[in-house]
Length: 240
Image 1 (cartoon, rainbow, N blue to C red):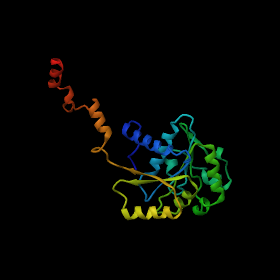
Image 2: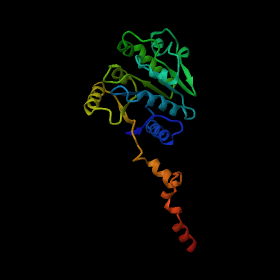
Image 3: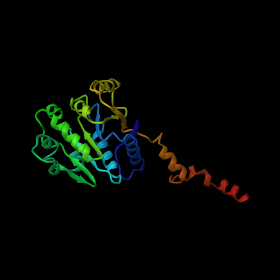
């Protein structure tokens, strides 16, 4: 289980957390299509998947695609400030081609949700959807898919059946243990390959390795904490 909070490009700790997760996910070379979901709303799954996809796109010679399959909330398009006129729904229905729908954001390819289908379960469970994901899997090194929370809709339970792995995002101190148990039971019933859990919104001030590292290496502005560089230490050095 990895622990992260809200993404900040100037925050070394959070960036390292995303890179740590990236390392775990790249160990198994057969894991190429990855569903990221959560048990409930507001656990931060869309923020996590957007920034994790960006983190993967930093790698050399790696093609990364992010697909928004949360047709009601459509958080990916809002996160990147993209128009959502056409998207994955239009590709699956044959209205538009992948080339017409994909948008590139700093080396990361993004396909928004597109039009809201009248029945998402039928769309996601269709052979056309499965074939689309399979084809995209061949074109990209990694395909990340965002979906609605598991306890709200059945969409994630459908998608998880034809992706290589599923990652759960849980908000620290926010999810009820009973809800977490129900979530796992739902995923297990459909044969989901759960490859990890990300604990989001975790306050790491007291436990952070990086805080200790910075204090040790001199980045901490409170000089009283740097006893190695105090007067007594300098006198000992002179005597030697």
